[in-house]
Each structure stands twice: as structure tokens, then as C-alpha cells.
Amino acid sequence: MLVILPRPALRPFIGRLWASTSTRRPAGTREHVLPTGQMHMVFRLAGDALRLFADADDARGTRVATPVLGGARTSFYIKEAADPVLSVGVQLLPGALQALFGVSAAELAGRHTPLSELWGATADTLLQQLAEQSDPRRQLFLLESALAAHFPAEPTLHPSVRRALGACTRPGRIDEMVVESRYSHRGFIALFRQATGMSPKRYARLMRFQALLASLREHPAASLGALAYGAGYSDQAHLTREFREFAGVTPAQYRLLAPAAAHHVELPGPQAGQIHSRQAGIGHL
Image (cartoon, one colour):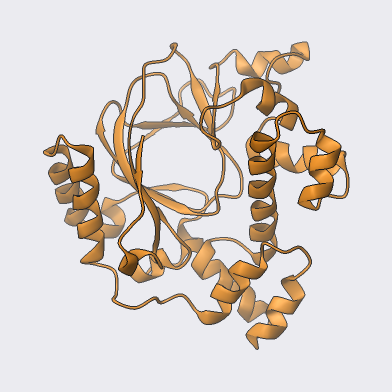
């Protein structure tokens, strides 16, 4: 995977741009894609359309047209991952959807939206232009330039939300954030949802999960009890419940699966739902 940071003028809106070519995997392979708190715009340049599954027992799935806008999520989703796919994409930060499309992140949260519904013919034109380029760096430069032409020159994220995003990395600050914003509780929550697609409390829980995920990968031999304490969970059971909610697997199962990419947990297909009943393997999805 090729990953680049955007030009400075775009950094208030974009976290990173990437180009990726996946390899062929066994038929039926699926992935749990874990939430990051961000939104993603993805262009599939080769391979089948994105296929999503409602749960482990969903054998048919639903196909989503490319390019697609993945809204902010507070839990994992399941996608098909067997066939090779060539794609390029961009990570959109809180406030980016409002700046780019005039749309609240809350409207698109938790779902995949064909980009043509937001950008019209521009989406299909950009897809064609990207497909005509064979060099990943040229593709990312083209994507970055297209976005630069549509984003405003100045950041648009509300200052109260910007301060709150930083505070969300520190537990127990939600009430203080509301006071500091000088908005009513309801008004501040609405403002935060418009930018991020979720409530401050949910966002803070997700940021704690991100910190845990990083610690889990950095310290593979550390006890879950120690990791729970370090990440601010009340105990190991609390950590496990939250991890399963966000990832669809337990921390122990995540370690066993040892995904190459932190937020992409590769699983077998329909068999995965059967493993839980045998109390083995990856467990319930």
C-alpha cells in the first residue's frame, strides 16, 4: 500500500491518501473493517464492486457502486475480501463533509453512499481519470488535486468542535467540553454530530478503543488486565465487551488472527458463524 499525507492546505480536511492492491484470498474470505472515527472516499479501479454483509449469516450480501463514501462508523462492518481489488482513497477528517458537500456527517454515518449521490457527474469523471493512470503516485496526485479544487481555502470546523476533538482523547471531559463550548448541552451535541457523525461520548469511547488497539499491537505479550488499566477501562471484562462491540471479535481472538493491517481483520466466510457454536476459533461475528 502506498500512503501519502496531503499538502498542508488540505490537512484540516484530509488525514491521508492511499493506493492499494489486494491479493487473491480463499473463496468466501471476509473482513471485519474496524471503525476509525473518520470517513473515507474510495475509488475501485479494478475488481468487483464493494460487497457488504449484514452479519456472519448473510450469504448474499449487498453490492455498492463505486466510487463510494464510507460514513463515520461506531462499529465494524463486514465486506467481501476474496478477489483482488485495485483502489485509491482518501481519509476525510471531521468537518470535511460539510466543507466538501455541505452535508452533515450525521446524515451519512453508519452507511456507504455512492459518491454520485453527493457529487453528481464529478464522481464518475474522476473515477475515469483515475483509471486512466497506471502510476499510483499519479493517481493520488490527481485525487488530491481534484479535492483541492473543491475544498475551501480556510478550515471550516467549528472551534468548539476542534477543541472537543482533542479533549475526547482524555476520559471524563464531556461535561467540561459542553461548558467550554458555551452552547446548551443539546446544541453542542448537535454541532459535534454534524462534524463527526456521532456523539462526543461515543467518539471518546472510539478514541479509547483506538488507543487500546495500538497498545495491543505494540505490546502483544502484555496482559489484558494491564492494557485495560492503561487505556482507562474499569477492568478486563469492560475492555473485552467494548472491544467485541467495536471489532466483532474479542481481544484474544484479534491477537490470534494477527491482522496485517490494524483495522482489517480477515476471517473465513460462512464458516465463521459456525465456529462460535463450537466455542473455538474466531467466535461469533
